Structure formats: structure tokens, C-alpha cells
Image (cartoon, rainbow, N blue to C red):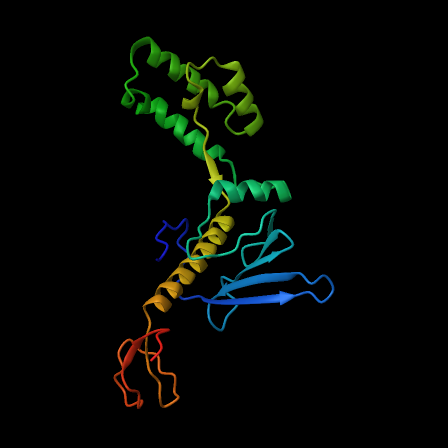
Length: 228
């Protein structure tokens, strides 16, 4: 069944070709499983997934990344963003998302202007929160200063309401979408193979068709894999 998970980006992989290969090392005897997705006859939007020795390496137009787990595409496969991000950090000390000062400042100003009233705050509580959020604006440009001031210096009743926006690594989002496109193609292939009908092929041509509409000389239709 096709994977209908929502895409993270607007990169369209539907017209990309996918090549799968398996290379065995003569020295170690270990096999590397490789999937490459790219536009036909070009090197555009090319992403390569290499599983080897317990590690996934991703290479191509969107950068090179290493994950401390192998991730093999499958018909039921998909990307758990947080899980992949965790394995990326462990391997590379990298992160999938980072503090976004501009988006955080925008959210604070929206809360001060009318957002807090929309959430039902009023009276002294409203004025106190507006004062606290206005104070945060002086620190929002620096991640460390903002975190220290917001979570240590100001006594918020609920720390979960502190604005803290993050921006994702768009290149990694594209890579995640590419992996899920491969999984979707695998699922479609499996579903097609399960539903295929094959004619008897007594003329030796091995005809595969949903309905035998040409002169192949077969004796009739049969389900794929059925013996006659």
C-alpha cells in the first residue's frame, strides 16, 4: 500500500528514477546496500543512501550525513523525524533543528499585541505576562542568553508557554522525503506484483498482462504463480 504521509518539502520526487544495488567487499565480505534516487538522465536532486557496517551514509545534492543506524527502505517504511535526528546527533554532533531567533521574536510580539488576550488572559495576569514577554525581547537574538533569562531569571507560572521557535534543516527534510518516496515505490511494486495476472505463455513469450489482449498464442489467463 502506498505511503501517504505528508511531505515536508515541495520537492517532487515522483518523476525520479530509483536504482538499487548491493556491493560485496572482497576483503571483509560485508555487503553494502545502496539506493540512489535522481531525475532521469541528470544528476539533479540526487540522493544516495548507503547502508554499510551498521551505519547509513547519505550523500548527494543536499549534503553528506552519517547516521549511527542502518535504515533500509521497505514497503511499510517511513522516517520518524525525531529518531533519525537523534541518530544523526550521536554520529555527528549535528542537529536537525536549531533555535530560530526571528520566528521567536515574531511570536513574542504577536502574544504581546493580542495573542494573550485571545488565550483568555486579562487583568493583572495579562499585564504581568506582557511585561515578562517584553523583557524577553531584549534577549531573543542570542540563544544562550534567551534560554538563561527565560528559564531562570523570569518566574513564569507555566514554562511551556515561553515562546521558543525552531527552524528545521531543510536539506535533511528533503532527504527524509526522498527516503519515504523510495518506501512508497517499494510498496507500490509489492502491491502490483501481488495483483499481477499472467497468461499461460505456452508460446514461450512469458506474457504479463492484466488482460491478454494481443495474439500471444496462450491458452488463457491464470493468476501469477499459478500452475496449469
